[in-house]
Length: 69
Figure 1: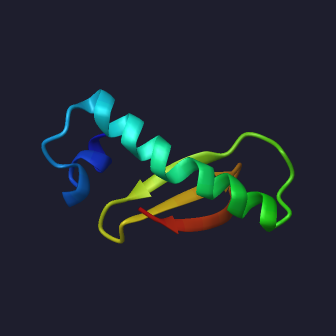
Figure 2 (figure 1 turned 90 degrees about the vertical axis):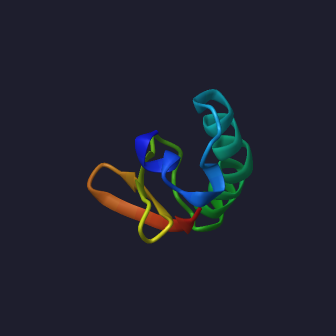
């Protein structure tokens, strides 16, 4: 959450709104991208790189893909 707070799109928003906006606008597209890429169902972790404005989706130590945020 701290990394998201520093992104210009989310500055000044309260945490609940920040998380809700982030999830609402990003996760559906990521799920479609994972499905299109043939990824099997399973747990996916997300790390945020605020400098590149990217979210990296990983399963274990394998990077599935990176997405713009």
